[in-house]
Length: 327
Image (cartoon, rainbow, N blue to C red; front, side):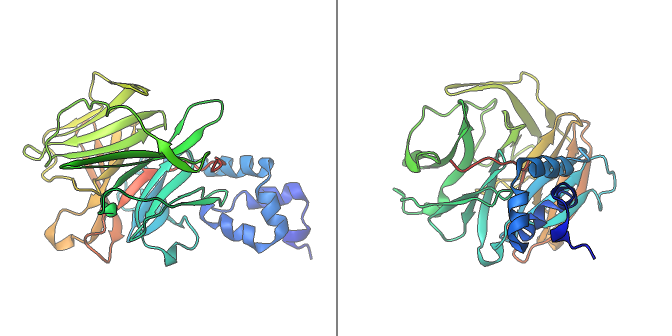
């Protein structure tokens, strides 16, 4: 009887490359040989190739009930009940840690453990993790906002942005993963293509990790717009002169506009936006929903399941696995 451990390397690679992304960590913990094999470049190429099969599906990292999950969203599927598939928990050991926010860039995740002053950057695909301790000049440290990105150079330098703006206090800092330090500062904030009020909903999202999209919903008229950049530089930004999506009539509610503002992503080819928020019916306040909005003002709702806490809003971002290193 042939055992998996006795298979030729090429055949073992072929078999293991079909393992779901959420099960890869279990494969690596099975035996030393599989751990070594799963980190070979030939295996990674096959495995990521398998993960990209069926390009109609978007991989999405979703935070619900303080846990991080991987989901796939097939926008070609017109069945609202089956267009979203739960693939499982993305981060091993997350059962022991409550997570309040999550961000993605270049295959890396930045997440904020609830009640902790540290932030965590990890690569779920490679298993690398970095805990980042920091001090805060503002005593209400849980009100800080974060972002994850990288500096374009000969090699990508990944960085964490931390900022806060309150009535009489402003602080912005950047952590450089390559130097393991908070040391950088940056220029003035770049303009948005509109002037929002405090009560309006404003949320940012990345587009192909090269540009930005911003969702803007007016609190009074409930009109919703999504704008996309055409060029981003250190001290300037150019927004497309034509709005990507504009909805005037079909929305009868406002998306969440507080610190956990409604998260979203857009599909430029299919000309739709997917916004993640709570159900707006008072009897279903624990239910999480993906709102699929078309440029033709069509609106579909996909049920994401219930949260134990009505105040735990779903947060989501597009996810593309990679071998990016935490350096």
